[in-house]
Image (cartoon, rainbow, N blue to C red; front, side, top):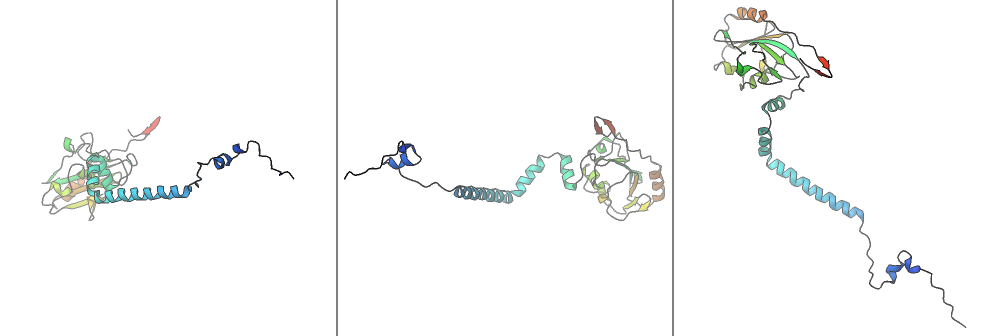
Length: 219
């Protein structure tokens, strides 16, 4: 009886896996799961993040000081006081500061346009211009290099403050002006009524309207 041999499949070595199985040098290796690669990437990212944060916290003071040194003085003040964007407000107020019985002349160059957010301009000696929200009066004096209004009077004794004709007992440096405010700061009790009359006589100019010329701008 003849042995029956099953016919060899035609082109079976071209079928998937058949060539590899017929090759004596072939060694099967199971594919690496993708989850392993993902875990490795996550671990490396975590190590990098921890290293970066550790470096930042260890050197935080030096890094922050370098950032501040590279900032514009206006930006430093804006960040310090956490004010609004330029143009978010526009207000005018009058201020009179009496030292040695005379009003300080804020119309001189060292007091003019010292900061775009709050300043004196056009050589006007008394009218404050404010161009952003949350800008305290202290920011105006800080832009002159004064840490406090008392810089104008070393002793700072006898300081009295009036806001719109009424005695003001809070810290005026923290006050945010509103349009038409009138502020009197004096280092002497004498002649307060006379100084208030002078303050009331000063004209506070209206805020210019916005003009639309493609983009809305202040004029």
